Length: 384
Ligand SMILES: NC(=O)c1ccc[n+]([C@@H]2O[C@H](COP(=O)([O-])OP(=O)(O)OC[C@H]3O[C@@H](n4cnc5c(N)ncnc54)[C@H](O)[C@@H]3O)[C@@H](O)[C@H]2O)c1
Image (cartoon, rainbow, N blue to C red; front, side, top):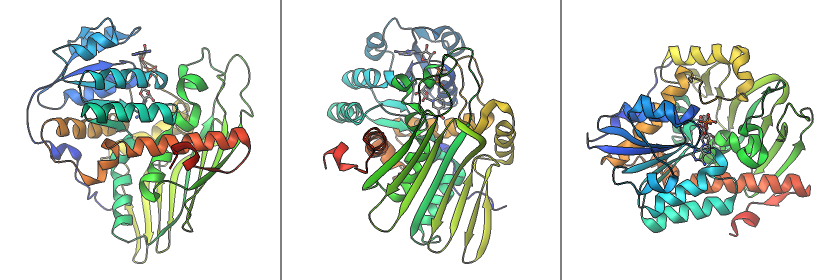
């Protein structure tokens, strides 16, 4: 096993300046992000807005509950806003925070349509405030390692990426918002991570196609999202990607396989770890920060808790160690930017709006392809 060579983003922090955060949405991941931010010297969480589940965060973080989004965003004791509300509610929160002139960390997916995403990015840019998309996969050690090996030419030209995130969903006692297309966007938007990483490596595709549907999960015990989505991306330069998402797969898989002209990399999120084959042989890397986090992920996926990465946290659940670890890395990066650390070019797309825009644009194009049963140019969505 090669030792990880990527430096922790925590090292980029440059100051202990105080940052008082307001947390919008304090469920499963809002609490996780809050805990991540509180590890940073100078960070406090002063306010929480969550219409149903504020109590835990208020007592754990010693924060005040705000009665409304506007109150939180405009409070003098809030310097920056963390948006971890359900996907459908991100737009309103980001626009309100931008109007209040506060820097924003927004969970993925940024939005459920390209129009909303553009409005959010424009609102932040017009107000001159930082808006970072929480595309957390970019902070995984093994993903950073593969991106570095691509950048330095070790894998040659990337010809093809196959990203797969699927499993089987059993009947649910109650239907989470995460299973409703109008609230979460369904698998493609809710699990935008893989679509984002493909585009971090290959750029935005020119044309896309998607087939699929809800093939095995109709009825009252399920949401209305499509449980089988098969997407193809064409980059116009002799390179391609395919993505497979859904909860209609009895043999769960979760991986990103990069095929280059000189080598290949398997980012395995199930039997956790990264294997790179190149002209000089084969190397192995940790996906997460240490053996314990990787082993924890493997064990978690092997249990029934997280079948292929398509099961979900609830407000009262505690995330596994590896997820806490990547959340710590991304919150450290955002906090570092607020306290004077130099931006890292590797993460520029997360803060200039481009990763959010291209991931939602491509998701919208794929959705249109499925709806109209045709190949779609991404420019039909973006207008350029
Ligand atoms: N990066 C990751 O790996 C990761 C993991 C889990 C969740 N997420 C993202 O985090 C966000 C929250 O997901 P979660 O798992 O915490 O869901 P959750 O259901 O556990 O929590 C959502 C919380 O938001 C609250 N809420 C509902 N409407 C709201 C509104 N209008 N304004 C503010 N709060 C509102 C709910 O009461 C609930 O407490 C989602 O965008 C999700 O995609 C990211």
